[in-house]
Image (cartoon, rainbow, N blue to C red; front, side, top):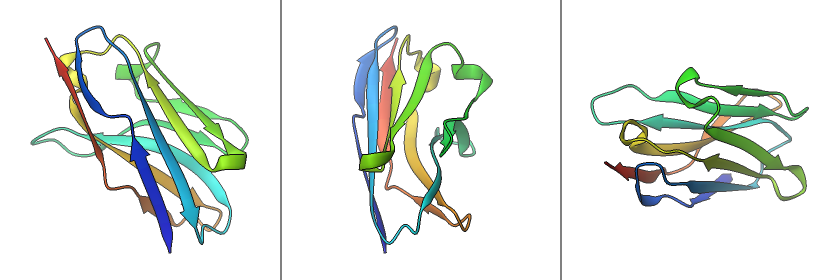
Length: 116
């Protein structure tokens, strides 16, 4: 059983910042990649940012230059620093952990709301 505990969501004004954290524990069998996805009302879930075990990162075009993903391998924790937030960043953000067998695990989601 894998547990993902997310924190850091909330309400912020446009232009503000938030930092999301996700700590993984349990029977992970080696983490390959950790990342964040988001889903806004009426829209499909989309990749926001992802980081692999060797430090390679990928970002959605809409967040490049504003968001930064990092991880602490010793703590099995991934972070998402979100700066210059916009109302269109409003969504439920989900942590995703992919193990070396490419099995994906999801967090429960944390709400991020950006007011204009």
